[in-house]
Image 1 (cartoon, one colour):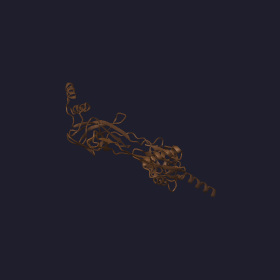
Image 2 (tube, rainbow, N blue to C red):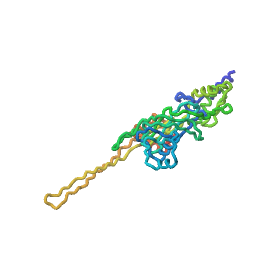
Image 3 (cartoon, one colour):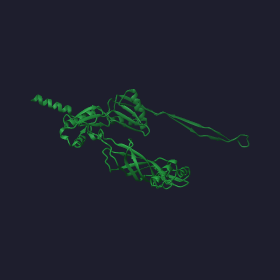
Length: 373
Protein backbone atom coordinates (compact mmCIF):
# COMPACT_ATOMS: atom_id res chain seq x y z
CA UNK A 1 0.00 0.00 0.00
CA UNK A 2 2.83 2.38 0.91
CA UNK A 3 4.70 1.53 -2.28
CA UNK A 4 1.59 2.31 -4.35
CA UNK A 5 1.10 5.66 -2.55
CA UNK A 6 4.71 6.67 -3.18
CA UNK A 7 4.37 5.77 -6.87
CA UNK A 8 1.23 7.93 -7.18
CA UNK A 9 2.92 10.90 -5.46
CA UNK A 10 5.97 10.62 -7.73
CA UNK A 11 3.71 10.50 -10.81
CA UNK A 12 1.82 13.63 -9.72
CA UNK A 13 5.07 15.49 -9.01
CA UNK A 14 6.45 14.64 -12.45
CA UNK A 15 3.23 15.72 -14.17
CA UNK A 16 3.04 19.10 -12.42
CA UNK A 17 4.26 22.22 -14.28
CA UNK A 18 7.86 23.06 -13.48
CA UNK A 19 7.70 26.31 -11.52
CA UNK A 20 9.39 27.92 -8.58
CA UNK A 21 8.10 30.55 -6.22
CA UNK A 22 9.89 33.23 -8.23
CA UNK A 23 8.39 32.20 -11.56
CA UNK A 24 5.13 33.95 -12.50
CA UNK A 25 2.13 31.89 -13.59
CA UNK A 26 0.26 33.02 -16.69
CA UNK A 27 -2.89 31.80 -18.40
CA UNK A 28 -2.50 29.53 -21.38
CA UNK A 29 -4.61 31.93 -23.45
CA UNK A 30 -2.06 34.71 -22.90
CA UNK A 31 0.86 32.81 -24.45
CA UNK A 32 -0.87 30.73 -27.12
CA UNK A 33 -3.49 30.83 -29.82
CA UNK A 34 -5.76 28.07 -31.08
CA UNK A 35 -4.72 26.70 -34.46
CA UNK A 36 -7.17 27.87 -37.11
CA UNK A 37 -8.04 31.08 -35.27
CA UNK A 38 -6.16 33.79 -37.15
CA UNK A 39 -7.16 37.22 -38.48
CA UNK A 40 -7.58 37.83 -42.20
CA UNK A 41 -6.61 41.00 -44.05
CA UNK A 42 -9.10 42.45 -46.49
CA UNK A 43 -8.46 45.45 -48.72
CA UNK A 44 -9.85 47.55 -51.55
CA UNK A 45 -9.62 50.92 -53.28
CA UNK A 46 -12.23 53.64 -53.02
CA UNK A 47 -12.94 57.33 -53.38
CA UNK A 48 -13.08 59.92 -50.61
CA UNK A 49 -15.18 63.02 -51.34
CA UNK A 50 -15.93 66.25 -49.51
CA UNK A 51 -12.35 67.47 -49.11
CA UNK A 52 -11.75 71.20 -48.85
CA UNK A 53 -9.24 71.62 -51.66
CA UNK A 54 -6.77 69.13 -50.22
CA UNK A 55 -7.55 66.24 -52.57
CA UNK A 56 -5.57 64.78 -55.45
CA UNK A 57 -5.39 65.75 -59.12
CA UNK A 58 -3.73 62.70 -60.65
CA UNK A 59 -5.07 60.71 -63.60
CA UNK A 60 -6.05 57.97 -61.17
CA UNK A 61 -8.24 60.42 -59.26
CA UNK A 62 -9.98 61.54 -62.45
CA UNK A 63 -10.51 57.94 -63.55
CA UNK A 64 -12.12 57.01 -60.22
CA UNK A 65 -14.33 60.11 -60.43
CA UNK A 66 -15.51 59.04 -63.91
CA UNK A 67 -16.13 55.50 -62.69
CA UNK A 68 -18.27 56.85 -59.85
CA UNK A 69 -20.30 58.98 -62.24
CA UNK A 70 -20.92 55.99 -64.49
CA UNK A 71 -21.88 53.81 -61.52
CA UNK A 72 -24.43 56.45 -60.54
CA UNK A 73 -25.91 56.35 -64.05
CA UNK A 74 -24.23 59.46 -65.48
CA UNK A 75 -22.66 57.84 -68.52
CA UNK A 76 -20.52 59.81 -70.92
CA UNK A 77 -19.45 58.99 -74.46
CA UNK A 78 -15.84 57.81 -74.94
CA UNK A 79 -14.72 61.11 -76.52
CA UNK A 80 -15.97 63.14 -73.53
CA UNK A 81 -14.27 60.79 -71.07
CA UNK A 82 -11.00 61.11 -72.96
CA UNK A 83 -11.24 64.93 -72.93
CA UNK A 84 -11.90 65.00 -69.19
CA UNK A 85 -8.89 62.79 -68.47
CA UNK A 86 -6.60 65.00 -70.55
CA UNK A 87 -7.96 68.30 -69.27
CA UNK A 88 -6.98 70.16 -66.13
CA UNK A 89 -10.35 69.44 -64.56
CA UNK A 90 -10.05 70.01 -60.82
CA UNK A 91 -10.57 67.06 -58.52
CA UNK A 92 -9.10 68.59 -55.36
CA UNK A 93 -12.25 67.84 -53.40
CA UNK A 94 -11.71 64.07 -53.68
CA UNK A 95 -8.97 61.50 -53.30
CA UNK A 96 -8.34 57.89 -54.27
CA UNK A 97 -7.60 55.85 -51.15
CA UNK A 98 -6.48 52.36 -50.22
CA UNK A 99 -8.80 50.87 -47.60
CA UNK A 100 -7.85 47.90 -45.45
CA UNK A 101 -9.33 46.13 -42.43
CA UNK A 102 -8.69 43.10 -40.25
CA UNK A 103 -11.37 40.43 -40.22
CA UNK A 104 -11.16 38.67 -36.85
CA UNK A 105 -11.74 34.92 -36.48
CA UNK A 106 -15.40 33.87 -36.16
CA UNK A 107 -16.59 37.24 -37.55
CA UNK A 108 -20.23 36.91 -38.54
CA UNK A 109 -22.21 38.54 -41.33
CA UNK A 110 -23.61 41.88 -40.23
CA UNK A 111 -20.94 42.66 -37.65
CA UNK A 112 -19.18 46.04 -37.79
CA UNK A 113 -15.41 46.43 -37.98
CA UNK A 114 -12.97 49.36 -38.06
CA UNK A 115 -11.28 50.26 -41.34
CA UNK A 116 -8.10 52.18 -42.14
CA UNK A 117 -7.96 54.66 -45.01
CA UNK A 118 -4.73 55.87 -46.68
CA UNK A 119 -4.37 58.30 -49.58
CA UNK A 120 -3.21 56.63 -52.80
CA UNK A 121 -2.87 59.75 -54.96
CA UNK A 122 -1.19 63.10 -54.25
CA UNK A 123 -3.82 64.37 -51.80
CA UNK A 124 -2.52 66.67 -49.07
CA UNK A 125 -5.07 65.80 -46.39
CA UNK A 126 -8.14 63.63 -45.87
CA UNK A 127 -9.56 65.94 -43.19
CA UNK A 128 -13.33 66.20 -43.46
CA UNK A 129 -13.55 63.49 -46.12
CA UNK A 130 -16.25 60.88 -46.52
CA UNK A 131 -15.58 57.45 -48.01
CA UNK A 132 -18.02 56.37 -50.72
CA UNK A 133 -19.31 52.82 -50.21
CA UNK A 134 -16.84 50.29 -51.62
CA UNK A 135 -15.98 46.59 -51.40
CA UNK A 136 -13.21 44.99 -49.37
CA UNK A 137 -11.71 41.85 -50.89
CA UNK A 138 -9.79 38.92 -49.48
CA UNK A 139 -6.74 37.36 -51.11
CA UNK A 140 -9.09 34.89 -52.80
CA UNK A 141 -10.82 37.76 -54.66
CA UNK A 142 -14.10 37.40 -52.77
CA UNK A 143 -15.96 40.34 -51.20
CA UNK A 144 -16.00 40.02 -47.41
CA UNK A 145 -17.04 43.51 -46.27
CA UNK A 146 -18.45 46.87 -47.37
CA UNK A 147 -16.82 50.06 -46.07
CA UNK A 148 -18.16 53.63 -46.00
CA UNK A 149 -18.41 56.66 -43.74
CA UNK A 150 -16.66 59.82 -42.49
CA UNK A 151 -12.94 59.62 -41.85
CA UNK A 152 -11.54 60.40 -38.41
CA UNK A 153 -8.08 61.96 -38.29
CA UNK A 154 -6.13 63.13 -35.28
CA UNK A 155 -4.42 65.78 -37.34
CA UNK A 156 -4.62 67.74 -40.56
CA UNK A 157 -3.00 70.26 -42.87
CA UNK A 158 -3.79 73.91 -42.13
CA UNK A 159 -2.59 77.19 -43.64
CA UNK A 160 -2.63 79.34 -46.73
CA UNK A 161 -0.42 80.36 -49.62
CA UNK A 162 2.44 81.71 -47.51
CA UNK A 163 2.63 79.16 -44.71
CA UNK A 164 0.99 76.02 -43.45
CA UNK A 165 1.02 73.76 -40.41
CA UNK A 166 0.75 69.97 -40.51
CA UNK A 167 -0.36 67.98 -37.47
CA UNK A 168 0.42 64.25 -37.28
CA UNK A 169 -0.19 62.33 -40.54
CA UNK A 170 -3.12 63.90 -42.42
CA UNK A 171 -3.22 61.38 -45.30
CA UNK A 172 -4.07 58.36 -43.13
CA UNK A 173 -7.26 58.04 -41.14
CA UNK A 174 -9.68 55.64 -39.55
CA UNK A 175 -13.41 54.97 -39.83
CA UNK A 176 -14.60 53.49 -36.53
CA UNK A 177 -17.09 50.71 -37.23
CA UNK A 178 -17.03 51.79 -40.86
CA UNK A 179 -17.07 48.27 -42.30
CA UNK A 180 -19.91 45.76 -42.41
CA UNK A 181 -19.06 42.07 -42.72
CA UNK A 182 -20.86 40.53 -45.68
CA UNK A 183 -19.32 37.03 -45.75
CA UNK A 184 -17.81 34.76 -43.12
CA UNK A 185 -14.34 33.24 -43.36
CA UNK A 186 -14.34 29.48 -42.64
CA UNK A 187 -12.60 28.76 -39.32
CA UNK A 188 -11.82 25.10 -38.64
CA UNK A 189 -10.52 24.35 -35.15
CA UNK A 190 -11.27 20.66 -34.60
CA UNK A 191 -9.95 17.80 -36.73
CA UNK A 192 -10.88 14.27 -35.68
CA UNK A 193 -11.64 15.53 -32.20
CA UNK A 194 -8.26 17.25 -31.79
CA UNK A 195 -7.36 20.92 -31.52
CA UNK A 196 -3.95 22.54 -31.09
CA UNK A 197 -2.46 25.32 -29.00
CA UNK A 198 0.21 27.28 -30.91
CA UNK A 199 2.82 28.97 -28.71
CA UNK A 200 3.54 32.59 -29.58
CA UNK A 201 7.13 32.08 -28.37
CA UNK A 202 8.10 28.46 -29.04
CA UNK A 203 9.86 26.90 -26.07
CA UNK A 204 10.28 23.24 -25.02
CA UNK A 205 9.67 23.88 -21.32
CA UNK A 206 6.61 26.06 -21.95
CA UNK A 207 5.04 23.45 -24.23
CA UNK A 208 5.68 20.72 -21.65
CA UNK A 209 4.18 22.80 -18.84
CA UNK A 210 1.07 23.48 -20.93
CA UNK A 211 0.62 19.79 -21.68
CA UNK A 212 1.14 18.87 -18.00
CA UNK A 213 -1.41 21.44 -16.83
CA UNK A 214 -4.04 20.21 -19.30
CA UNK A 215 -3.35 16.58 -18.36
CA UNK A 216 -3.88 17.42 -14.71
CA UNK A 217 -7.25 18.93 -15.63
CA UNK A 218 -8.17 16.21 -18.16
CA UNK A 219 -5.85 13.18 -17.87
CA UNK A 220 -4.37 11.87 -21.09
CA UNK A 221 -5.67 14.72 -23.28
CA UNK A 222 -2.54 16.71 -24.22
CA UNK A 223 0.71 15.86 -25.95
CA UNK A 224 3.65 18.02 -27.06
CA UNK A 225 4.15 17.74 -30.81
CA UNK A 226 6.99 20.27 -31.05
CA UNK A 227 8.18 23.37 -29.15
CA UNK A 228 5.46 25.43 -30.84
CA UNK A 229 2.51 23.01 -30.75
CA UNK A 230 0.52 21.23 -28.04
CA UNK A 231 -2.20 18.91 -29.38
CA UNK A 232 -5.27 18.29 -27.21
CA UNK A 233 -7.73 15.41 -27.63
CA UNK A 234 -11.30 16.35 -26.72
CA UNK A 235 -12.55 14.10 -23.89
CA UNK A 236 -15.87 12.30 -24.00
CA UNK A 237 -17.29 14.76 -21.45
CA UNK A 238 -16.75 17.63 -23.92
CA UNK A 239 -18.78 16.13 -26.77
CA UNK A 240 -21.38 18.65 -27.87
CA UNK A 241 -19.71 21.44 -25.89
CA UNK A 242 -16.27 21.74 -27.50
CA UNK A 243 -15.75 25.46 -27.02
CA UNK A 244 -16.42 25.25 -23.27
CA UNK A 245 -13.57 22.75 -22.92
CA UNK A 246 -11.25 24.97 -24.99
CA UNK A 247 -12.11 27.98 -22.81
CA UNK A 248 -11.46 26.01 -19.62
CA UNK A 249 -8.08 24.87 -20.92
CA UNK A 250 -7.18 28.45 -21.84
CA UNK A 251 -7.78 29.60 -18.27
CA UNK A 252 -5.31 27.10 -16.79
CA UNK A 253 -2.13 28.74 -15.48
CA UNK A 254 1.41 27.62 -16.27
CA UNK A 255 4.96 28.83 -15.76
CA UNK A 256 6.36 29.84 -19.16
CA UNK A 257 9.94 29.02 -19.99
CA UNK A 258 12.11 32.02 -20.71
CA UNK A 259 15.09 32.63 -22.96
CA UNK A 260 18.18 34.39 -21.69
CA UNK A 261 18.24 37.36 -24.03
CA UNK A 262 19.47 40.95 -24.13
CA UNK A 263 17.64 43.18 -26.62
CA UNK A 264 19.26 46.48 -27.59
CA UNK A 265 17.67 49.21 -29.69
CA UNK A 266 20.55 51.52 -30.57
CA UNK A 267 18.26 54.06 -32.27
CA UNK A 268 16.34 54.81 -29.08
CA UNK A 269 18.97 53.77 -26.55
CA UNK A 270 16.64 51.18 -25.00
CA UNK A 271 18.06 48.01 -23.45
CA UNK A 272 15.96 45.12 -22.08
CA UNK A 273 17.70 42.39 -20.08
CA UNK A 274 15.91 39.09 -19.44
CA UNK A 275 15.72 37.62 -15.93
CA UNK A 276 17.76 34.54 -16.93
CA UNK A 277 20.77 36.49 -18.23
CA UNK A 278 23.96 35.32 -16.52
CA UNK A 279 27.57 36.46 -16.63
CA UNK A 280 30.86 34.81 -15.90
CA UNK A 281 33.14 36.72 -13.54
CA UNK A 282 34.48 39.65 -15.52
CA UNK A 283 36.09 43.05 -14.98
CA UNK A 284 34.79 46.03 -16.97
CA UNK A 285 36.38 49.44 -17.38
CA UNK A 286 34.87 52.35 -19.22
CA UNK A 287 36.57 55.58 -20.21
CA UNK A 288 36.44 58.23 -22.92
CA UNK A 289 39.16 60.30 -24.55
CA UNK A 290 37.95 63.91 -24.93
CA UNK A 291 39.77 66.26 -27.32
CA UNK A 292 38.67 69.91 -27.18
CA UNK A 293 39.89 72.46 -29.74
CA UNK A 294 39.08 76.17 -29.41
CA UNK A 295 39.89 78.84 -31.99
CA UNK A 296 40.42 82.42 -30.66
CA UNK A 297 41.79 84.47 -33.56
CA UNK A 298 43.34 87.88 -32.78
CA UNK A 299 43.56 90.97 -34.94
CA UNK A 300 47.07 92.44 -35.45
CA UNK A 301 47.13 96.18 -36.09
CA UNK A 302 50.19 97.82 -37.81
CA UNK A 303 51.98 100.77 -36.20
CA UNK A 304 50.69 104.28 -37.07
CA UNK A 305 51.98 105.77 -40.37
CA UNK A 306 53.53 102.43 -41.34
CA UNK A 307 53.01 100.49 -44.55
CA UNK A 308 51.71 97.44 -42.68
CA UNK A 309 48.27 95.90 -43.10
CA UNK A 310 45.75 94.70 -40.58
CA UNK A 311 45.84 90.90 -40.40
CA UNK A 312 44.11 88.18 -38.41
CA UNK A 313 46.49 86.03 -36.39
CA UNK A 314 45.15 82.51 -35.59
CA UNK A 315 45.27 81.33 -32.00
CA UNK A 316 44.45 77.66 -31.32
CA UNK A 317 44.02 76.11 -27.88
CA UNK A 318 43.91 72.31 -27.66
CA UNK A 319 43.01 70.38 -24.52
CA UNK A 320 43.15 66.58 -24.26
CA UNK A 321 41.38 64.96 -21.32
CA UNK A 322 41.20 61.27 -20.54
CA UNK A 323 39.15 60.59 -17.40
CA UNK A 324 40.39 57.84 -15.19
CA UNK A 325 38.49 54.64 -16.00
CA UNK A 326 36.66 52.93 -13.15
CA UNK A 327 37.12 49.17 -13.08
CA UNK A 328 34.04 47.27 -11.94
CA UNK A 329 34.27 43.56 -11.13
CA UNK A 330 31.07 41.60 -11.82
CA UNK A 331 30.77 38.29 -10.05
CA UNK A 332 29.65 35.09 -11.74
CA UNK A 333 25.89 34.44 -12.18
CA UNK A 334 24.75 37.80 -10.85
CA UNK A 335 21.09 38.81 -11.02
CA UNK A 336 19.71 41.39 -13.43
CA UNK A 337 19.50 43.90 -10.59
CA UNK A 338 23.13 43.37 -9.63
CA UNK A 339 24.18 43.64 -13.26
CA UNK A 340 22.27 46.93 -13.70
CA UNK A 341 23.75 48.33 -10.47
CA UNK A 342 27.29 47.43 -11.54
CA UNK A 343 26.88 49.02 -14.96
CA UNK A 344 25.25 52.15 -13.49
CA UNK A 345 28.22 52.50 -11.18
CA UNK A 346 30.36 53.02 -14.28
CA UNK A 347 28.26 56.06 -15.19
CA UNK A 348 27.64 54.87 -18.74
CA UNK A 349 24.75 55.85 -21.00
CA UNK A 350 22.42 53.33 -22.66
CA UNK A 351 24.28 53.71 -25.96
CA UNK A 352 27.57 52.92 -24.19
CA UNK A 353 25.92 49.90 -22.61
CA UNK A 354 25.29 48.59 -26.12
CA UNK A 355 29.04 48.50 -26.77
CA UNK A 356 29.72 46.92 -23.39
CA UNK A 357 27.24 44.09 -24.00
CA UNK A 358 28.70 43.44 -27.44
CA UNK A 359 32.18 43.18 -25.93
CA UNK A 360 30.87 40.86 -23.19
CA UNK A 361 29.34 38.61 -25.86
CA UNK A 362 32.56 38.52 -27.87
CA UNK A 363 34.58 37.68 -24.77
CA UNK A 364 32.28 34.78 -23.93
CA UNK A 365 31.30 36.22 -20.55
CA UNK A 366 27.67 36.93 -21.51
CA UNK A 367 25.58 33.74 -21.43
CA UNK A 368 22.56 34.99 -23.34
CA UNK A 369 21.34 35.84 -26.79
CA UNK A 370 22.25 39.36 -27.91
CA UNK A 371 19.70 40.91 -30.24
CA UNK A 372 20.38 44.29 -31.86
CA UNK A 373 17.50 46.28 -33.33
